[in-house]
Image (tube, rainbow, N blue to C red):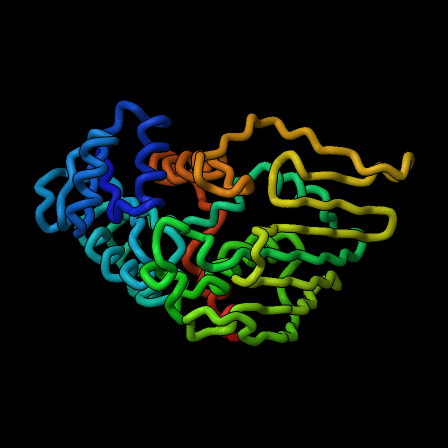
Amino acid sequence: MKIVVIGLGSMGKRRIRLLQELYPDYVILGVDGRTDRREEVEERLHIACYDDISNLNESVDCAFICTSPLSHASIITKCLSKGWHVFTELNLVDDAYESNMKLAMEKGCKLFLSSTFFYREEIKYIRTKITQDVKWNYIYHIGQYLPDWHPWENYKDFFIGEQRTNGCREIMAIELPWLIETFGEVRKTHVVSDKMTDLNIGYHDNFMIQISHENGNKGILVVDVVSPYAVRKLEAYAEERYLCWDGTPESLRVLNHSSGLLEKVSLNEETEHREGYKEFIVENAYKNEIQEFFKVVLENKSPLYGFEKDQKILKLIDSLGA
């Protein structure tokens, strides 16, 4: 199997490292227009790099697209046109979704969209607990001050600083897919948002969203790029049931109704973290997702998430004003 990773920023390098670890026999190539990134990857990760896929005179099977979101659509089209299976990071906009889904069908290629939280063990556990025999309420806050997301670069040089791919929009695109799969389709929403920082951005930096689900569940989703302390905190409760999660495997707890005590949930996976990232950035889920992609490619497995579902999520996010 020969794979090209397009975009050698932080996510591209992460994907390369995990691919090398999971599939040491696969040949991995890199593509990036920046000389410094190519030189760093060639030196540290020992793979051949090119400045453009047009200069790649190799027979490739799959492409991992790890560039900034607004560039994804045209790159996906180029890769599918070459007959490559495509793994793409979050797109955040639905540019060329219809035409690329059609092209993938015509070329017999798999088109796989990242939605990493589906592959987290905590999320899998939470989804087993949110049963449909009772009504659930939840309160979920995700926030982190925008300049702290990538402290090694200016947020204006990172796609989260742009209006169409802004930080609040990215958080929603990460969280809403699993929330809707867990708590049910959205019936209606109510949003309160504004800008409360002096950040040089052209979008609202905090959202409080009340969500009513079709099945009677209700939630409050709080999303911001304001909180000086990075937070991911979920509480969900129903009659005689309660669970909470602070974004790390170790923080997942569920109520023992008999004792009245919160008990830590033991997950069947040793947690991996990468230095330089917050503790709730767990490497395991990225590994699980890559493995899922190759099951889709090699075993014709149906993906957990895809472009059709994402198109609905992006329309919901548009309606929220993010």
